[in-house]
Length: 168
Image (cartoon, rainbow, N blue to C red; front, side, top):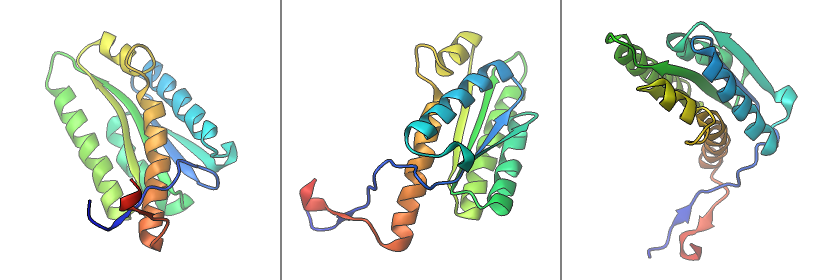
């Protein structure tokens, strides 16, 4: 192994401010994602008063709301939650692709982590599985990604903390 640095800060959300944008469309699933997201944020030290939740009509409205939370509330990360289930038309493909593209663009344009916590499912059963049943909960996973990305980017920007690669 060569000499170098590995940036891997602890998964600690204390002191972070996190925005959550949740889509009302398929609200039954999104509510389960939101509960898991809030639970994981709390479990990893993000104070309830440092979390802001914004509800929007659907997945297409997630990116612009994420950008506004970053601009107006100075959050360290934003989690976008939603559920898109395939129907009989190509609408699913357009919504899934464009919401993902918009969320990625919001992160790249602002330099703030914007996490894609949107379940895309072929069937209702898959949506159930991915929002808290057999396949875990994408909302909880997204919360952890938000904390990790906020800490990693802060470490990269500040040049700390680092662990010598030889210790890994």
